[in-house]
Length: 273
Image (cartoon, rainbow, N blue to C red; front, side):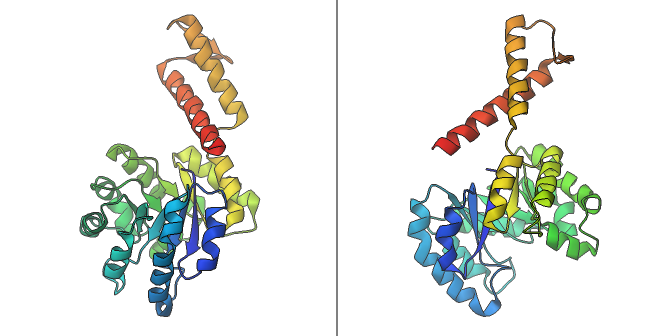
């Protein structure tokens, strides 16, 4: 999964549009996108929509309010509903909250690392049972550290999250949002940098961002063609030394090429399906 599109739980009229936007997953948000006075009604809207979520081929995740808030327990009860495929937990910093979510819902947990403590404890969080992928909450992280939101300022945190995911043996993490909704060039650049660092997907805050993110986190035609040349040349050499495009092909290069070919086939199959 490459693209993760947010939709406010308080806006049920947007649910169908979000599911049809082409994102690999939709995150129904009960936290930041919902005013305090609308938390209860947002839960009711989501409860009414779970049958539609269940019928959709798009994976539906629910971002609940954080542990320690007055809405946490009721959000957990809703999160256990059939039709919700995973739980996005904000302000993930310690194992206790993750344990509570996993125990109450028996569903995959997607912790958001969005504070200094969360980034420091990223490996511990990633190793918790039930954790599927980490998410980088870049905007809240910027607020917590009182730093700017430039790539350089947040590079260390991003690197920690990528490394923690790999060491814990879970899937590549999901990068934070690009807040410039109308700046397609910035979105493409942010997505390309995230992918080059080892992220496997990105959060989207508007349907128009989905296509750019999907393209950025999918192998390009040139990448696929080169990967196929490597695989074919290596197979013809029957394990002997081989050079492709002026580069010596050893086992790590071959394995990466096979990964790209496999990913391209998975993406094509997903689109056709």
